[in-house]
Image (cartoon, rainbow, N blue to C red; front, side, top):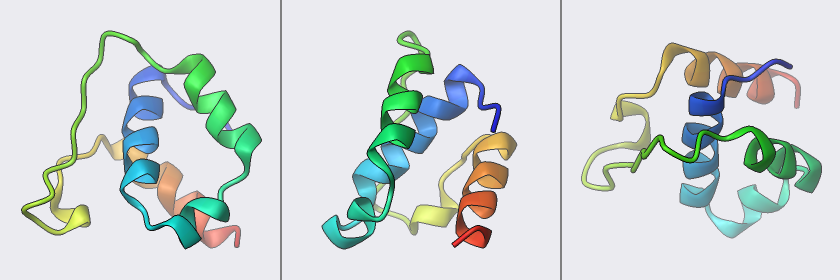
Length: 72
């Protein structure tokens, strides 16, 4: 899976937003990979005042999440 550095930042933020049970289902090596490629200059924060999926994610981030969910 080829993920851009900005999408890695968004994915890491989504993972932080998940409850503990869901976070445990994400392999540590995937999180490590995202941390190794993330763009340190790109800031993305989830707006917790709206539904998670109403946030303005990059298309690539949404596509990656869909791939991850479909591979379960």
